[in-house]
Structures are given as C-alpha cells and as structure tokens.
Image (cartoon, rainbow, N blue to C red; front, side, top):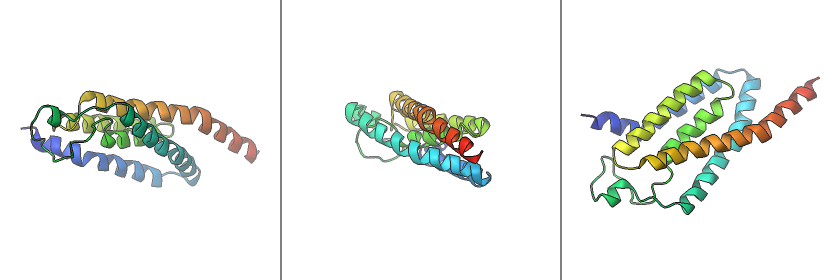
Length: 160
C-alpha cells in the first residue's frame, strides 16, 4: 500500500528539494544570491566532508543486509551511515534557513519524508537519518556563526 509513495520519497523526493531551493535562489535579488552562494559554497562541502568522516567512524550495515531481505530499491550493501539523500536535503534546508525560514521549514519537512521513505524501503535505519540531519545542522550553524556573521559585517562596513 505504501510501496509506491515510499519508493518515490526514497528515490526522487530529494530532487524536489533541490528544485525548490534553486527556484527560490533564482527569485532572489543579486545581493541575496551572493550571500546564499557564499554560504552554500562553504557549508555544503564541509557537510559532505564531515559525513564522510562520520561514515568512516561509524559503520551501520544497511537493514536489508542485516535482515536478509530484498529492499524495495536495489542498493549496494555498503555502509548506511549517513544517508546521502537526507544529507543533501538537510544541507539545502540549512543553507536556505538564514534567508527564508518558511521555505527552510518546508524543505526540512520534505527531508524528513525522504528519511522516513528510505527507512521504509529498507535502505537505512533511523540513526542514519538522524546523523545526516545532525551533521547538516551543526556544520551550517558553525559556518554561519564563524564565517557568515563576519562576512556580513565586513560587507556592511565596506559599503559605508
């Protein structure tokens, strides 16, 4: 009954998140686009690096490997931690947050649906989803606090 929506959520919903973020980005004034690009250019690669380190430090076999069943979506039997699909959605939601809390909330909801779908189809366990979300939030908060705050002050002072 839930197979088709779960498969869609697990395989394709992260693309919807990316499209929504891009549509928002291109609808912004040039000054806001610059801020988003700078924040994304620093934050997204750092989230990815942190996730790779996390995956090396924590091995979480995929549920279909441990449970000896065929998942609804074919996948390699590699480490499930963290979920890359959720990581991308969470990274985009975190990058959009400073400029649009409302859109960011929508992206977070969709990201949670991606995560629930990936658990439902047998590719991940909840810890993989929670880990992805946690890494994105922590990295984005640190980058914003350390880099973006200083950058915005610099630009503000430079214009005057």
